[in-house]
Image (cartoon, rainbow, N blue to C red; front, side, top):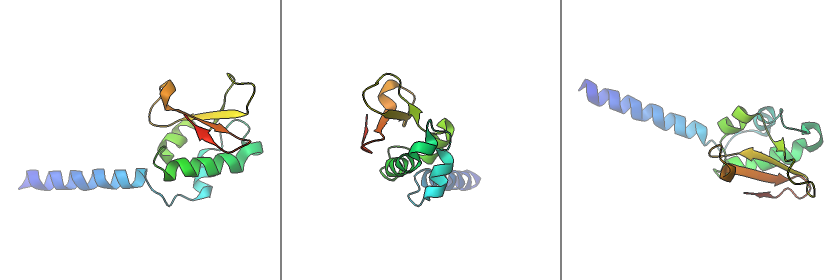
Length: 108
């Protein structure tokens, strides 16, 4: 019986964590606080916030990932476009999400 109670409690805890990781009710204030360390944050605050909110709502990024990174990083590899990136789903090159701050479009 104790084993069943333990596994039930464990399942409930994991379910709660998963729900909190994929919250869709995250406010823009929470998102702005999470990305406040972004490069050029004062210039692109709204674009960063809206794009981050969209990525979270679509399940591509979690708020925790964004918090861990502190925000968007300016790409120095592409001088032709104003690109910034963030990692979602891992830390490999293929996990980078690029944001063009002029268009608001995100790409992998």
